[in-house]
Length: 630
Image 1 (cartoon, rainbow, N blue to C red):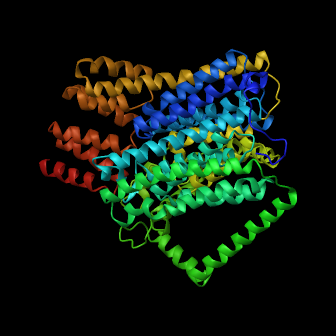
Image 2 (cartoon, rainbow, N blue to C red):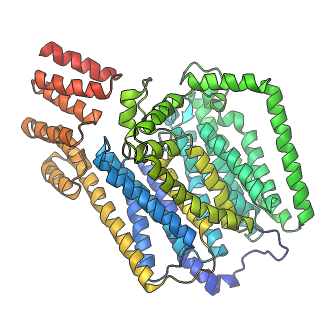
C-alpha cells in the first residue's frame, strides 16, 4: 500500500521482468494452498476430522518439499525462523503429550494439525521474493473466502431446503460451526481492502477486490459471529494506529462497511424470523446483490482515485477525523447503555448466566449468553493442577465432561490461549506466543513501512487472533491454514538471499518427515472409512489401518462395529485399554457387551463411562437398562 505519486499499475511489459518471473513461480504455489483449502471446506463441510483435512497438509508439505529440493527457496528472516521453530515445537509437544492426554488419538491429531500450520507458515516465507508477488499472493487469500461466500449465498438462494443450512438462526454452512465459517470469511477482508486501496493494483483488480471484501463481510453477517465482530474491531483499531498510510484504507473500508450496513436487516433476517426459508433465501440473494454493487462502486472509486493525490498533512487530518469519530461513537454507545458500571454489571451477569434460547435480541450480535464462563472456569481450575505441560493435547473435552456444570459437550475451551494453557501448560503457551508473535513482529515492522502484504496481514491476523481468543477456530484447518499463510505473506522479507544448499537440504528433510507423519495417518483414516461401507474388504482394510496408524483407536472402534461378535468385543476391549478415559470408547464397548447379553460386564463399562461423564443422560439410560437385565 502506498500513496506516493510514482505508484502505478503493473504494466504488461513488466510481466516479463525477472522479478515477475519469480512471481509467476510463486503465485501458483500459494493459490494451490488457498484454493484446495476452500474446496475441501466445501466438500468436507469444514470437518475437523484429521482424515478430511490431511489432504491439504499433504499438499502443502509436498509443495514445500519441491520448493526446497529445487533450490528455489529464499532465506527467511531470523524472527520468522524463530516463529517457525516454535510452531514446530508446539506440534511436537502435542504429539508427545499423547503419553498423558486422556485422548491420545486426538492429541496426535492436534500435533499433526500444528505441524500442518507450520508448513503453511513456511511456504510463503520461503517462496515470496518481494512486494509484487506478495500482492498477488494476497489476491489468492482474498479470493478463496470471497468465492466461498458467493457459492454459499447461491446455495442459500436456490436450495429447496435452506433451513437445513442454518442452525439456531445462524449460518452453519458449509462449516457446521457458525464462528468457524465466520473466521473463514473474515480472513479475506483485510487483504481485499488493502488491494482495493492500492494504486499499484490495476483498476479492474481493485474493483474485484472491493467486491471480494463485500462478499466476505456480508458472509460474516450471515453467521452473526460475536467473535468475528470482536476481531473486526480489534483489527481496525490496530491498522488505524500502526499503518502510516491509513487514509488510503478509509474509502474502501467505508464502502464495504456501508454496503454491509445497508444489507444488515436482510442478511440477519433469519435470526428474527426463526430460520424462515424465505428469509434465508433472501439473505443469500442480498449477499449476491451487495457483491455486484461492490464491484461497480470499486470501479468508480479506483478510477477516480487514480486522479487524486494525498500528502502527509491530509493523512494526519484524516487520522484525527477518524479518532474523533471513534470517540463520538464511544460517547454515543455510553449514552445508549446508561451508566457504564451498571451496563458492565448487567453484561457480566448475562455472560455468567450461560446459554439460553429465550433471547429477545434483534440480532445474535447483541446477545452475550453462552457457556464460555463455565468452560473457562474449568480451564483455569485445571491449569492450577497441571501448570507446566498441562493435561495433554485435546484433553479439555474429556475434562469438561467430568467437571462441567452444563449439558454442553465442548471439544475445546473456546479460546486458543486457554486451550493451550490447560492442555500444554505454560510451556505450550510460551511456544504459541513465540510461534505467532515473532512473525507478527515482522508484519508490524513491514506495515509501518507501508508494505501492502504486511498491511493486509496485520489486519487479518490481528482480527483472527482476537477472534480465536473467544472461539475455538484454531481447531478448524479451514480457518487456520489461511491464517498462517497470511501471516507468512506479511512476514516475508523482500530482497532476502537464496537459501544455502545445506539449509535447503535440511528443510527438504523436514518436509519429508512431515509427509511421513501425514500420509500414513491419512491412508489409515481412508481405509477405516472404507471398512465401514465396504464389508467385503473391511477386515483387510482395518488390518492395514492399524499397521499404518498404531496410535489411533479408530480402526479398533470401526472393527467393533463391523466385525463378528467375538472379534468386535476384542477390538473394543483393546480400544478401551488404549484410551481408558475416552467416554465414547467406554460407552461403545459397554453397549456392544450389552447387545451380546453380557449385562454384568456391560454394567462395569457403562459405570466407568458415567464416571467420566456424569451428566450424560444417554449413558445413564443405557446403564439402567443393563442393570435391569443383569
